[in-house]
Amino acid sequence: MSAITTLEPRLVWEQFDAITRVPRPSKKEGRIIEFLIDFAKRHGIEYRKDAVGNVVMRKSATPGYEDHPGVILQSHMDMVCEKNSDVEFDFEHDAIRPYIDGEWVRAEGTTLGADCGIGMAAALAVLLDGTVEHGPLEALFTVDEETGLTGAFELGEGMLTGKYLLNLDSEDEGELFIGCAGGIDTIATFHYEMEPAPKNYTFFRVDVSDLQGGHSGDDIDKGRVNSNKTVARLLWDGMQSCELRLSYFSGGNLRNAIPREAYAIFGVPTKFKNEFLNRYRLFAADLENEFRFREPNFRITLNEMPEVEEVLDARTQSGLIYSLVGVPNGVVAMSFAVPGLVETSTNLASVKFGDDHTIVVTSSQRSSVESAKTYVMQMVESVFTLAGADVAHSDGYPGWAPNPESHLLETTVAAYRRLFSTEPKVRAIHAGLECGLFLEKYPELEMVSFGPTLRGVHSPDERLEIATVPKFWQLLCETLRTL
Image (cartoon, rainbow, N blue to C red; front, side):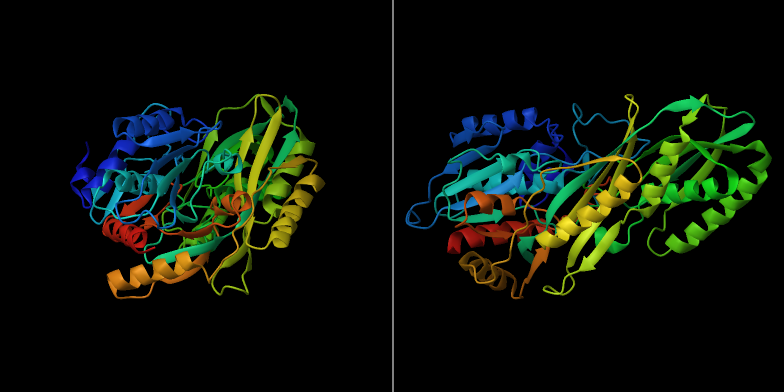
């Protein structure tokens, strides 16, 4: 066990520590499913697993609470697998290495997996703790929330019977969420050919790194710089001024993470080498000035490379670079219904060259207004279509419309007020939650989402604020007791 098991409430931290030792990448949740089933068997808890791997555990009401309504505690099993480029780590086999850093818990060089590991841990702790008073209880653990919401989309028939659902996948203590954005992915595929590199060219590699990244929903309004867009800006300038030819581009990894790193390999005619270097120095200085208040650790480096053998065909190069520069990215519109809430956004998530002569550009669009989600998707599709790419979309997922008159919300607000003598904020969130999909299958559900404070989610800077975990636990227990 790690040092985090000495923290309070110990039962929650012990479960979280155990979870961090189980590899659980999205779409590869086999080990964490086994862990959950073994947990249920060891503790004599009724469980069921559906066809896609979702697991639900059931616990009878505590004496005197048999006539209380059924409650579902819901969290997802998978985690975002991001690491710093200089860290050796295999997310399919290695255990996360959590450590205490002052007021926070972090992981060594990787995402921590507190999203949504701490929600899972709280649900398991409720199942174990005989002192928690509650009505009939179900704990639902879903698969593949981070990359496709597969578990919520394909939730097995009859998996849930409760009337109220507490989603334990939020990231701001003191805030109760009653609505979320819907989302869809747009995937552009360029088909390319390689051709012999032109003679008398000097080749370079440009790297953009040390950006903050973050969650493409929750952090999209924070002005985080997108590494793919930044590299594309340099390539665009080189195309206009120095006959730049691109050989390779790679940036970002996950559809729901703001990309932190990207690089490209390219060449310019040797006769333009000095001119290009001068332009690069001015470009780098401009970026440092542009980003200094929002990306204090931003780095851009340029290194001369040995001569490469092949470059991208000119037509595909133009389409790729022009579209990466031209496609919208970031906040598109703020909500007029909920002040301060991002209504619509888009994130240029990743650019990957494939061995099959394809370049796949993945982006994700979000909105709390379904028609606006469709429109921003059309914007993105239009740019890539004009650039000559084939464009496809994911199935998408619905938003969760707020219900401010919910009895569950009223009870949770009252519990928070009673425990902490202050009023919680009631909000909607721009990030996607599984709640909208649950509502499609179980339209009578009332839902509230809350959790402890997380920062840097979906990046190696992910951290969990220690002092908020006891408050999260107390609120969960008090809501169950009084519902």
